[in-house]
Length: 201
Ligand code: MN3
Image (cartoon, rainbow, N blue to C red; front, side, top):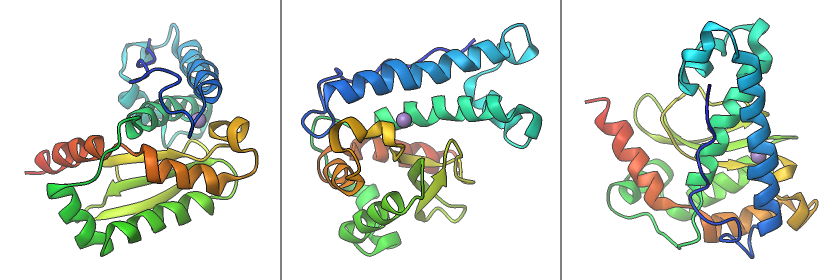
């Protein structure tokens, strides 16, 4: 059995950029629904003893387990999305800022790539900041529940309509601009960078 990680802030903490209503539905209905479906699918099977990461790894390449993979990946993706946001403004500094400048040339270029990947994702999906095999930062879009090949995730942006439709209707660009300018948790991205670079030594 898996459990839903708590929201790292109050449901009204990201307003006015993401409303309490959006966050309540998103966490309490959408995210919770994925958790419930995973638990229904693994109940009374050997998978019930595994962690969420193990369930994702074991089902990723198995077409017969597509429904379980999709729901399990969505549980992980949302956990990462909540942690990728914060009501307290942060800026990249130190090793992260250096890495951003090496990989993208500037913060402005990174933000532009995040915007481009998220805005141009056709239909539902995610825009990720990850470390590639050479430990360069990369922006990667994925469709629906899919995760990037790299498991070294720094942060992720939800571009499913349920993430913004109550607040912005069809204006995905406005949601993304507000999120990128005001809500990204660069301190969390720094923690992730430290974790992922330490584990390869
Ligand atoms: Mn979502």
